[in-house]
Amino acid sequence: MPDDTSRFIRACRGEPHDTIPVWFMRQAGRYQPSYRALRQRYSMLQLARTPELIRDITVRPVEDLGVDAAILFSDIMIPLASLGIDFDIQENVGPVVAQPVETRADVDALKPFDATDVDFVLEGVERTVSALNGVPLIGFSGAPFTLASYIVEGAPSRTYRRTKHMMWQEPDTFAMLMERLADMVIAYLKAQAAAGASALQIFDSWVGALSVADYRDSVLPHMVHIFSSLIELNLPLIYFGVGNQHLLEAMASTGASVLGIDWRTPLSQARTMLGPSITLQGNLDPERVTAGMDTAEQGAIDICRAMRGDPRFIFNLGHGVPKETDPAVLKHIVDRVHAMGGDGA
Ligand code: 1CP
Image (cartoon, rainbow, N blue to C red):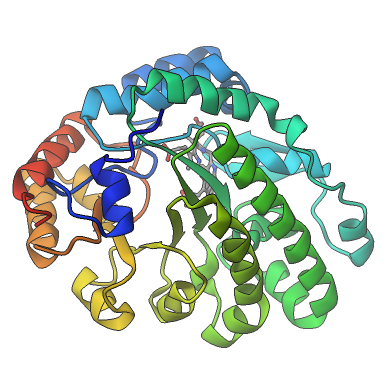
């Protein structure tokens, strides 16, 4: 059974805990020799579709680094196959979609999400939870806008041009796509919770590309729908974006219990802006951990000092672990952050 008294869950809820909890986005991945060895034999998608491998990859950073939570090894693209979206994850590129969604007819042709299509993920969650001995498992999904940015563009984009054009010029089509994706996110996250996940994170990595007005008009209603549908699970719900300082107040109004903050926004400023009742997660610049032990440590210390005594703080990077990272630096950061806590400080 997941351990409700873990410091990670307690910090999500703002309950007293012994020291600062820490985990890292992309803590399972290519900076690890063990992951690179598996990738010699299997593609990313083969790994993400095999429950035993999901378990082994997910548990490994908990054992190696001593982090306070595991995050399911998977990808935000995985559940989209159930809608009939054919994609691949290409080395050094990322997700590529065979037939991008362009028209209202394309949206209407999407199949309803069926959780039995992702049995391998749910079995991966079950196997991982039994192997974790009470360390909480974070399940996750992409958010509708970030998912839409891949399936409308067809590949990683820096401008999100097609997605924005659809949002402005075909608002009904865009809203219908967002609705279909929101329904998928809700069902997918509920299934992960039923399989044993202790917390759920929604990655809206690219939403910072939108203006506040566009976010409020075209994204926020779907996020409010998602969070209000998940509240009955009574699990911590984490909402994360990058380059989204201008959206933080709107994102905090969705019903998320934890907000992931990137490295550009000082956590003290986010706290002042958002008030005391939301947990903040972040926000070491990911390039600090590629810059060596001292530079990484100094950044971590500064963050922990700024958040000293705040019961609603979880240490993380501001985005994922870069693949050039030395695992020993991450291990040192975990130990250093744990040593700085005490009395929830
Ligand atoms: O070759 C490989 O092994 C693939 C590299 C890789 C890995 C390790 C990809 C391709 N995805 C993943 C795992 C992954 N993806 C996790 C694992 C759990 C963990 O954090 O340890 C998670 C949570 C994700 C989620 C994900 N995929 C996001 C949201 C988080 C984020 O980084 O912002 C996004 C945007 C993706 C898309 C994606 N998948 C892979 C890549 C390289 C990308 C980004 C491409 C781009 O720049 O748009």
